[in-house]
Length: 150
Image (tube, rainbow, N blue to C red; front, side, top):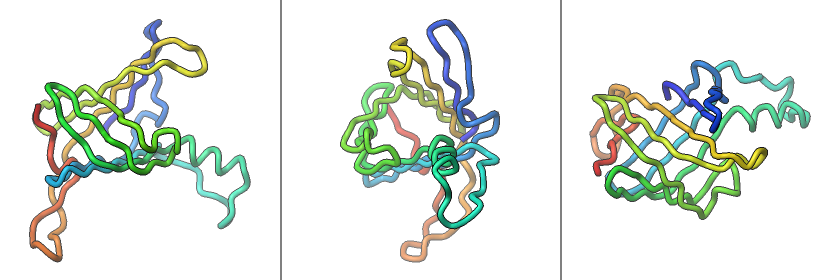
């Protein structure tokens, strides 16, 4: 993940996962997808059972979900089977997408639950070079395996 930018209706921009977030997004040929994203420099818990404030900080600085996906003209729909946030489990998350070389930009709009105003989310992913060979198939794997085609 190269960036995760949130823009309010007033044009105010923020980076909820910091200036240099990290993460991976994968689409596979069998219609499965998975994503995980996190802020760089997350806290390291003091112990194996972090206190509530550390748990909240860790939860607030990451996201992850997986499921299947489908593609329609200019949009990809993530059909969420499992998520770090149970509110997203068993939902469809629709994203508009744009591919530019090795970069995939996913955008969406949501109503901010705190303010009730619309917020625009833009997440930019960059394809990484294959690094591992699959044990069972001998094929290379990479993040953003298959860019959706619409």
